[in-house]
Amino acid sequence: MRHRRCISAILMSFVLFLQPIYAVPPEENQPENSQEKNTENEKRQQEQISAPSAILMEASTGQIIYEKNPDEKLPPASVTKVMTLLLIFDALESGQIKLADEVTTSEYAASMGGSQVFLEPGETQTVDTLIKCISVASANDACVSMAEYICGNEEEFVAKMNKRAKNLGMKNTHFVNCNGLDADGHLTTARDIALMSKELIITYPQIFDYCNIWMENITHKTQKGESEFGLTNTNKLIRQYEYATGLKTGSTSKAKFCVSATGRKGDIDLIAVIMAADDSKARVRDAITLLNYGFGKCQKYTEKEQKKISPVEVRGGTEKEVKVRQKDTFTYVDTTGADLSKIKSKTRKDKNVKAPLKKGEKVGETVYYLDRKKIGARDIVTTEKVEKQNYGSALENVLEEYFGI
Image (cartoon, rainbow, N blue to C red):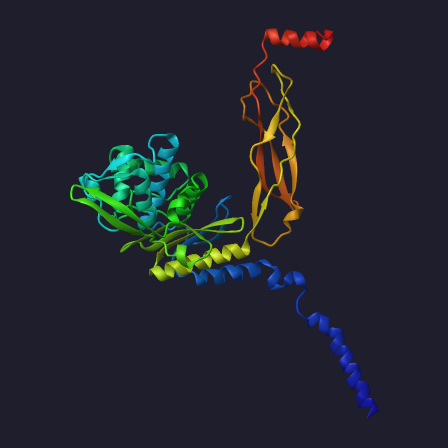
């Protein structure tokens, strides 16, 4: 009996001795702390998105958090109107048009099908009202009225749309009309929609004053008299999702159901683009899934105050040095759960700065690091101009340096 107990004890000790060898792998090999786990999460997330093409972007930085076939060219339906609205606000910003301007509806504009507010030929509405019609009710007739008012005709306006798209880096976009009605060659991508949506909401945040309207009436004033017409927002996310801020829906037989959905939670602004969803419910469900995913994954770092940077030496100028500043505040969006308090920065000034210098000219950069890895940079620019040294100024410098004159 004793021998059996001794043998059992020896065997147990042997098993315990071997256990660490066959136990759970060390932490660095654990899926939850590895790229494997991240890949599995991304795969599961991708399976949850039913639409064939989608993207999720953080708005302030343009950082892509999620993508699924983001560069597949597809018809965008009324999401096209994001670019139309962008050009309208460009025209307002430049002073070309004003919100109170009266716009007359042409025969052609009134003939638009699809979603519309039934503008009649000769009817006038203000720019402000037409923006509401486009943003809230996705009115095709209002789009053409504004295109004609800004550029004279829709063709010129569409050319401007395509030029603006090119300047924004929308490499896979070609617009044929200003409202998104199905047309051969009228194509874009989820990535490109995110780019133009970012430009609209960052450059012209007043768009939110329009696309957050749920219901509002407009007044038709025609030869037949006055009548009220109700606008109802096509973007159901505004009522169904607490963090929704906009932006634009679209649906046609070719495009199926699309949306560029913007949302804000805390200091995080996201853009979720869904293309070619099977139905409106799937479109909403996919957009909410992506936005929730982004809000759960993102944390944002914003530089509280910029470092004071000493002047930069200048060669061959009327001044020996030039005052400088950091051009922009640094922001960074992390999706890994890193400790953002560990972000460090290092200032690098150009060593061979020569006059002449314009105000706002780059003469260095501030580089930001997290765990010794570069995560971004901001330009250091001049705050004043420095003229090139001539004979007279050179003589003055010599006299001042050697004789104190």
